[in-house]
Length: 227
Image: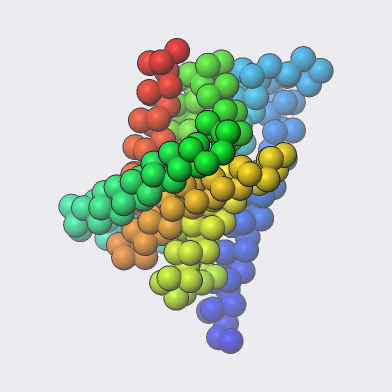
C-alpha cells in the first residue's frame, strides 16, 4: 500500500476518533460555564452540546484546512452545477426518508425515533441555540466526518456511499433501548447515502454541507413554530 493511501486512511480514522471523543468535550464546557451536574437541565445540555460541536468543528477544519480551501475554490467555479446535484440527491434521499418513516410508523407502534424526541426536547428548552447547533454546527461536523472522513477509507463509489449512509444511520439510533428503533437506520441512512453521492460527484464538501444545513434548519424552524 502506498504511503499516500496509508496517510489518507489514518486521516479518516483520526476524523472518527475526534467525532467519537467529542462527547468528552462536555467536561470542558461544564467547567467553563460552571454547570451543576447534579441539577442538569435541558438548557444546560444544549449549551454543552453546542460547545462540544463547536470545538469539534474547529478541530476538523484545522485537520482538513488545505482541502477545504481547495474545494471551496472549486465550488465557487461550479456552484450552480454542484448545487443542482446536491438538491437532486437531497430530494431523492428526502423522499426515501419520508416513505420509510411512514412505513415504520405503520408497521410498528413508533411515531418517531428516540434521537428525534431528544432533539425536540432540546428545541423546546433552547430553540434558537438549537437552530445554531443542529442547523449549522452539526451539518459541518457530520459532513466532514461521515462524508469526507469515510471517503478517505473507501474509494469505490458505491462501497463509500453505502458505508457512509450506514454509519450515519447507525449514529442516530445506536444506544437505543428498543431494538425496533434500528429500523430508523433506513431513513437516516438514506439521506447519508445521497449526501455521500453528492460529495463523490461534486468533489466538494460544501454542497452536501449546505443541503444538510438547509434540511436541519427547516426541521428546527418547523419545530420552533409549532411550540
